[in-house]
Image 1 (cartoon, one colour):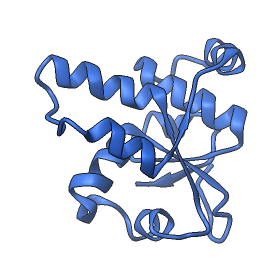
Image 2 (tube, rainbow, N blue to C red; image 1 turned 180 degrees about the vertical axis):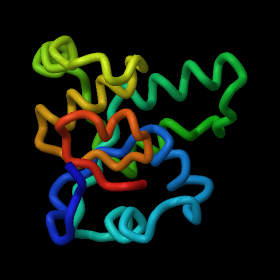
Image 3 (cartoon, rainbow, N blue to C red; image 1 turned 120 degrees about the horizontal axis):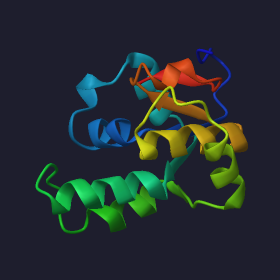
Length: 132
């Protein structure tokens, strides 16, 4: 289900949305830029996204500055993973095989969050999304 203005609510960033917001904001949609820059938006980042960045960085697929995680954790509310997220993830259909993205879907569903993403496979889930 697509995100509709003015239902800003609470926002969960997909990993690529975070990376674009930090290094290439021109890649983001006008709606995403507006929400990310709005004081009315509560911005969440999953620990799963940070873990994905750590893994990609360690295998040479992503270059992040040394203080990236500290900076990001001060700019966004970090959403941990709890049992309700695991249960929701376990019950998801296999529209998407990426475990990090499946966790983001589960967290958005459990928390009533709008997921900002451009991943078309995520759009196949019953979760509110906004195009990144």
